[in-house]
Amino acid sequence: MIKKIHMYIAYHTNEERNFIYGYKDKLLSLHKDKDYNGLDVECIEGSPVIDEICRYGKEHHIIQIKERRIDYTEDELERIPYFTLGIKGLNVPDNTLDAGVKYSYKCKSCCSGAVQKNSIELSIKRLLDYDVFLIEPELFISNRVREAFEKADITGCEYLDVIDKRTKKPTKEIFQIKINPVLPNMIRDEYVYTQYVCPECGEPSIQTASPFFYRLSDFEEKYDFYLSKKSIFFDCRLHHLASYRIPHIVISKRVKKNLEQFSVKQCWYWPVYFEELFNE
Image 1: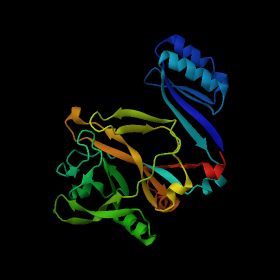
Image 2: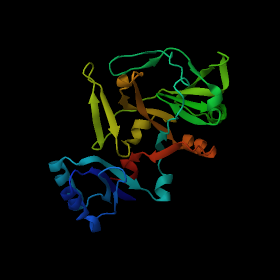
Image 3: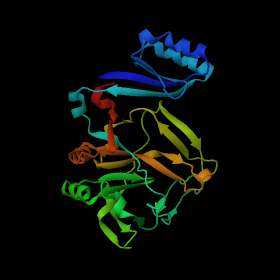
Image 4: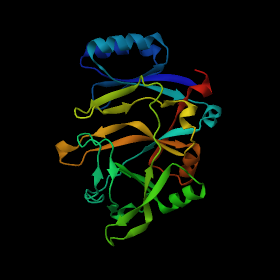
């Protein structure tokens, strides 16, 4: 296992850039951003270089992202029972997701506590090439993935009918997947950034820039699907669109293997870090 720290440094002056370049020989990697005045920096966790760069970055307000990355061996990966699931959102026409889907909220200002009140209508024909896809804030799967999940007795989720926008009837090709179990807060959150706190209810919006840290006991129910307790808030009001929250999705190794058998290209997986497994 190799533990790394990754930082994105948005410098303002040549002096700031040259300071970081002065550490180039002590870093794992250093790359210039092609479009902006930024540097991607990676170094070994625990290296004194980190402290020097972070001290300088704090003084000059230039470090934008700091995250922990872990490279596992194949044997270590085999021991990990859960992964966070990343899903690429689809670039679809505005009318693909029915704007009439209704939610109730615990807080309307930040969309916390959202409960979906009716079925979603989709233009099905546009989406038949995808086995798993995200149209924010909802997750959808093809019928063949649903059948595979049911055959494997995948738990922690339910499948909701999707209405074909053309026929106004439930489709047999695509289903909405709803995940119910919610994990407790992570046990370590030094790389979890609060981007926004709702002025109405105090609910934070977070950005997670590190592996997820949990205890094995957090998964004692052994569901195959979980949601993170904290979520990301997308405030779309300035664009005259509906705002929404998206929690992170955590899946079991069984779900990961089922998705991999379909060669789902728009999904990727990060191992959850369990301290009990690696005696940290």
